[in-house]
Length: 454
Image (cartoon, rainbow, N blue to C red; front, side, top):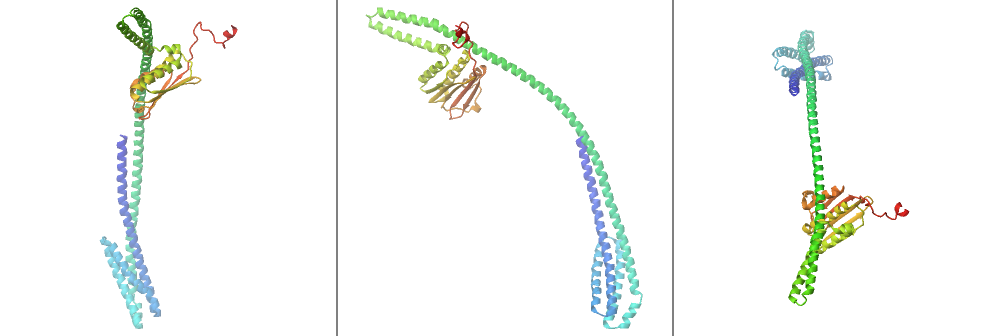
């Protein structure tokens, strides 16, 4: 509604301005023409006065210098009359008055020309006789009267044009006022409509915000549930690994050891049979291979070195064995750390998974393992000089990185992956230091008050 009203107001303003412009243009043209006519009439009167003055000066003195104004004025009269004929071309009523004026002007010029010619010929009595007649005075009065009538007509045209301009200005003024009022009404309607739309938009925005907040809360709850579930599954996985490692160590280890002892006893009793000794030796080698495989499987499931030797020694063993199996050169810079068992296992699994990825995908020749101990956090870094990949286009589940990231974040740490095609890969994890709580019955250190009291 407001837009339609504004458009109508704009069209009305354009129409009013166009009509006023056309009327004003015609009125100004009429005013300009009337001013030209009036100026030309005044010029003709002035020319006639100049001609009459020059004539009398020449008649009285007989000198040619006094005749010059007369000659100039007579020449200008013809041009001014031609100008008036052009200006009155479309005005039949004024053309009749112009014809009358031209007749009187030509008669006056003829009278003056006769007296000047007689004076120039030296005929004193003739030009004096001409001067004593009233012909010149009557023609001059007729010229003034006709010119005054034409001037009055021009003045009337001029006044009519001025009145038309005033009317056009008043029309434009009224139109501008009406359009301004319509614009104010349209603006008021626009403001009201905008306020209504803004209110509707705000209500919709509030509803969307509530829905968004509800969805975000639901996503956070589900993410937290999934994180808890993933952490629980990891804990269960590590527990099952530990249980399986213990079963393999206790049950399978006992069986393999007993079998090896039985083979040793049989070997001592069958010393006289070379063929049996050879077969028993082969069986002993198979049992040793089975025992070694059992140990490797147990170490993969639950590294015993982590609880027996500590994190640094476990990482050294892991890196050395990986280098022997893969043929890669492994450089290690490991600082001793004091952390709880779960975070030590997190670091161990991260390094283990990183080395597995290097062996499978990196096509590298060198790798480094760095463990730095700071006051309140630990930095773990595994890098290689392999082919790398585009980290920006990496899928979340690529090469077990999702599980690695979750394991680090579950320990309240942060995992950073830096890689580019042809520039290798670097995995950096930062974990907060949480020192293990002293177990019950553990002897106090020499620096504790209890030890000093002992």
